[in-house]
Length: 298
Length: 258
Image (cartoon, rainbow over all chains, first blue to last red; front, side, top):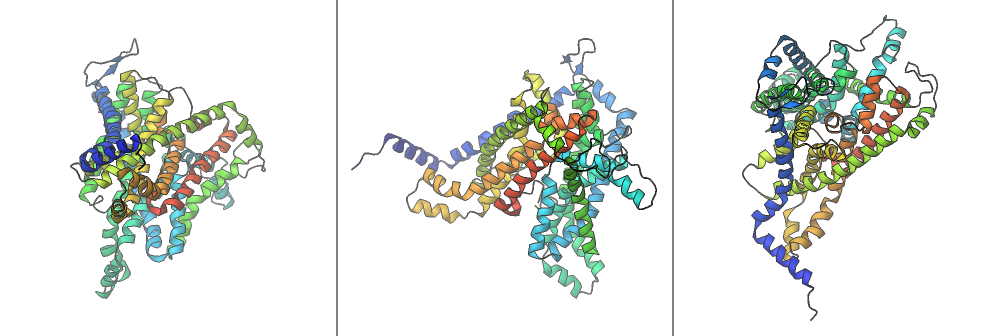
């Protein structure tokens, strides 16, 4: 008999040990990713929360690690409250628009299209979803600028001049464009899961199309809309690229105020204070979404 | 009506992308419409620009390292969550999605605060840490979706035939997962290659390709080159996704709640 190499015996012993102790296997697989998330991500969030209570020494430009609520006092002043309000209104407007645009599209994908078309449409949503964010923003800069495609086409149609570059309207269009696929996907999955029998039953009970839409389809699609809105809402709240590149002087959102506090003003503590605002808004939002069943539907 | 709506949405989604690809081959150096002829002049200029080159290399390095970390940690997390029932299991999946569901700027500021606090200088390492944090979930989603589809009887059969844990892992688990791992890696790379928000706060003075684009657009400089570079990034994000979609089926590509 050929003697087994020493390594094989060791690996067998190891395999046996692991097989007999499932908790050890669980520990081995889960602890590295969890350690990463706890040590790097959660700890960083904690440091950020702490940083919000520090200040910057105006003379030496260094961080003062002493507790102060000055940043929060500054946050609750008219300027910043107006920016927070503008951001939330923008995020809400984008979310509602995307939901309205996505619903018929997702309905067609899930209920009307053939299997082949459905696959094609799914790819047609996935490509812009993953396609470079900056490429999409830059495309809109080129479209909306003076002498760009939009003003040229409108002029050719004889509708006079449009100039919406660098306004809140421009920002709204671009946000809706960039986040639309994030809304279509979950709404499609929600509508796709509705059993045909429910829609047929509604028809059998005498409901016209409109009534079926309102009383059966929409309530069942709602968890999908809420799931999509988590992304459209949250991504708008924290974006600073689009406000800086597409928005105008009156288009400051939380994101680009945070950005300028870290960049030009070199005030990390106040940037951290501002970053707490989207977290609080998202906690409130997610709690609401949970109540509406967005998580059970997944 | 419905068909018209679908066609309009598709136009809305693809016309800007088509336009930006067209502009990459614009002959003129102003961005007016219609473009003044086609040429590959700016492609050549961008390709030979040393700033663009060094940004490209940094992006490639960051993407490869972040993808490696994400592959290891994302698949480990997927195994753990799939195989074991434990207290706080739901919390683990929520924690992994958090960096994608919360605005990126929060991850960015949080990491920046932490790096300053521990005195870690911003470098390739800090970029990779930031990218890996949100790439892990992409690999995790792909791998766990596949694990759910692999039947338990496969493992039982392997054990009945005398294979121990490691042999089962090598001959059953890895081959079953290979395409899911590949598509997870491709998507993680695409996500990292294009990321700008978190990177702004973790890169310091160096430029990744998206940071170079952002800077150039802000200053309004080298816009004809920007045209070319954004299309290059566009291709670098779309190709991995197209491959991943073929490998993984629709489930893994979602990136959003699906």
